[in-house]
Image 1 (cartoon, rainbow, N blue to C red):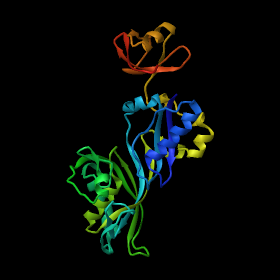
Image 2 (cartoon, rainbow, N blue to C red):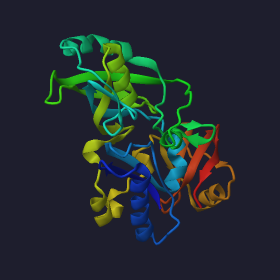
Image 3 (cartoon, rainbow, N blue to C red):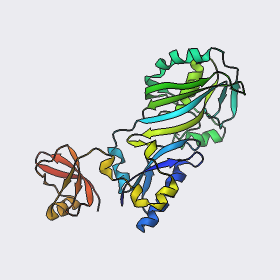
Image 4 (tube, rainbow, N blue to C red):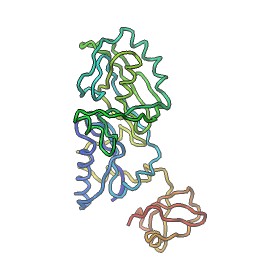
Length: 296
């Protein structure tokens, strides 16, 4: 079995837990308890939205996914900062946001668009000396983290409430960014630029590469139609497909270089056999085709 699933993860379960449930569905469907499955980018437990999952041998195709851009809708909450930089952490600082923050926020956005440096929060899956930062944070430890470069492709304000019942200000934003961006850190840093404590409220991932929210399926939908929810690799990874004859596919499966069929384009191609079963990924070397990933 090979393919991808566009899962809608609700707020609450971790990404690992969501993938485990998808793996169980397809393991029962395929009669394979050891079926592999893996997600394409962690989504925090409190966040909801698109969580792409690779099923079976598709886990070996993850490095071929060139488009790793993400798109989110979030709420920026001004007036309180937290230990986790989101609404679930303990309060670090509280202050009434300045009355003119909605007018000052818009001009600040340009400072955060493009290639910027972010310091991973302590409550994150980034590693420090082989350990997850959140493991250290739960022990009350804080370590020095190295800032890393991320890219914000677009940052748009969708609406703003200057004052809520709690005295906090709330802005709704859409963020288009590179893989590895912490939206809650972006919210924290926007507050710092405004001179007021801030954290991220709600977060919904609208897109992850080619996977988009309106096509995502709930777990019960996947369970009721596993085959219908499975997306062929060619629909996700933009590589051309070639078909080999019986001898060619047998040689390819055995790891041998085979003649490249006429008309084949692209350096890398999906390879299918005469029955149209996906047998691997090949690399064109002049008039020859070399196996790079073989699915036995």
